[in-house]
Amino acid sequence: MKSIVTKYTDYCIVCGRPTAETHHLVFGRGKRQKSDEDGLTVPLCSNHHTQGKDRLHDRTVPETLSKIVGQLAYEKHKVAEGMTEDEARESFRKRYGVSYL
Image (cartoon, rainbow, N blue to C red):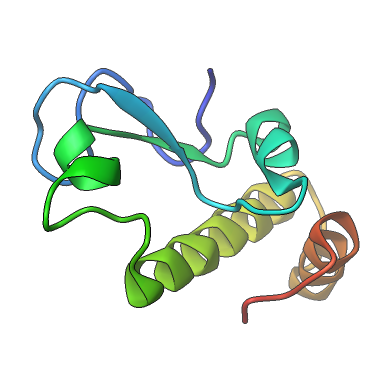
């Protein structure tokens, strides 16, 4: 799976341990597949994804920040492809049905 956030997909982005799982930065109600298509994924070890006390899932603030990072990565990628910042923001809103910014 290609990530537009990092090219280092074999290592957890938090601690550097080997990747066990892929986290979708934008998720929920049909957004996971779009996140795959757009490269809005990051590598995580199980401890930082779903298992440990520092897990990302099921914790309001980390989940919200994940979605914000996903939107920012999407917008940055679209600007690099030639969109204006406003066009990129609107593109994200239309594609995902929400804006986190």
